[in-house]
Image (cartoon, rainbow, N blue to C red; front, side, top):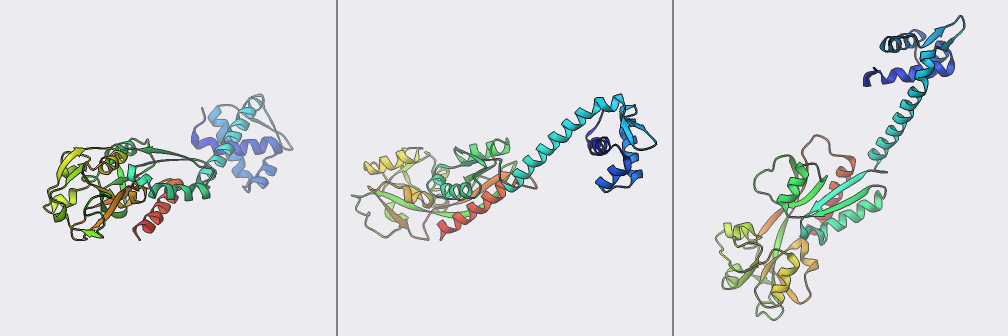
Length: 300
């Protein structure tokens, strides 16, 4: 039976069948006549039968050759379709891009990059998933996502490559009626007696992690995971919370966002993660560039 290495022999076979001549086929293909003859002989050896009758002038298909002809034409047509589809992937005229992101990346960073990508490459199908960083990294490693925007993971996760986008500062979200709501800058020591709305009872697992490492110990009032719910708790006067810079533009209008002093401000690194490998797809390469540009604008 034919192998993938013999597929090029079928192009020679079809050319000879159409031209009914080794000489004419060689001229059309840019080969020598002897090279064409050797390739036809190799295909005949593979099938174990003659495919052409050699005549004083030219050749004609044998019964085996006539049987093989429509199958060889089907192979040629499928390969032509495959070449066109692969070229469309290379030029981003078609294909898919599966993107994931943490919730705060959806406020500005991801929409900005996605809008730019779609405007340039409307033929590429884009899907989006949302989740926590750990879950998104698992999806990447399993091949279910092509790229994800994640916060700094603990250690270097297996099966993914990390591309630094920005170091994200934090704001303090206060009710508009809070005595400190009109301040331009706050120190963490001024907030030592406040109750915090946090995503975990362990401050080390929250946006406070870098401040905790520097010695600040927040008092956790309510544990609330959802970003929108956190804002609701703050607006109701139940505590204060941190708002990442990426999500600052989407904060509720009844909250005051106050910058923290640079010496105190918690921060987190934000990355684009891709499956580990030597060559990302053209879609991932282009989208990663757009993400970096969007991150640079936001960081500025």
